[in-house]
Amino acid sequence: MRENRRAKAKDDLSWAEVGEMAYGYLRIPVALILVEVIYWWATEPAASLEPLQVFLAWLWAGCSNLIWPGSAELVFHGPSQTWTGVDLIGSGFIGGEVALYIDAECAGVHEVMFLGTLMLLTPGVEWQIRKRSLIGMALIVQFLNFLRLLALYPIGMQYGEGQMHEMHEFIFRQGFLILLVVFWFIWFLMLERKGLRDKSAKPALSDLKSYTQIELRGSLPKASLVALTFCVLLAIWSTHEVALNEDNLQFKAITEECEGGDCENNDAKVWPNVWDRSVRGWIIAATIGLLAIVKIKPEESDLCEEE
Image (cartoon, rainbow, N blue to C red):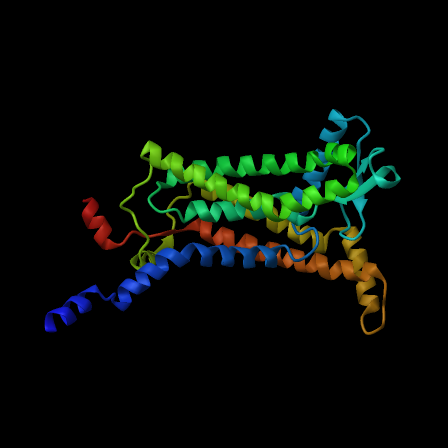
């Protein structure tokens, strides 16, 4: 009886081992949930990714007209007060045209963040390989996202406006998610076959201690310089929108006139949206800028091993 009890005691997992297992299995789902929360907070205001949205709308209308002359028109989207609207024109649509626009969710950033999180948390991959893979995957996802937009016109002309919306909704809700997981799985298998992943590397709670060893960078690498340039541009754009953009200042005046009264003017709702968008831009620029100028300092034990 004593021997059986001792055997069972040895087979039981300690709380430390349970914690290690939980961290290994749950860190990716928890990280994905955190990324989702950050994304939805950042894109809550309308046209929160306005520069990218306007560029995609312009590119969509231009390429559509290049392939099918007279098929699309770039228009001003009133609710978001941006040039993100694209009217598709053709006999296959009700009334001869259908009004669409590039929402923040149509910009492909959400998909890149989801796939990037999976790739960043894949253990045993060197940073250089991970970085090149992230850049390549981001370009592929953006290209496929643009093809999705471009394909709406021929689908609508061939099968009708209703089928076009159903197809778009399916790809938007389920199709892209399945595709992203397949991309990550193929990338993982390629690393395995080429021996580019350290199979012995496993996530451990002790890894979290390294994130407390933070110090300012002595010199900035190219990636940090690119990130800082992006932060400066984002901060300038956010400031311009609330301080120098004449149209937005007019909306601010309308909002101030409506304060304290029952104002049903839709223009009064534009300024709060612009302000919220700029605040998010400043916070994101400051956060990314801070991450660009600091680095995680290796622990002393790691330095001794290298020596």
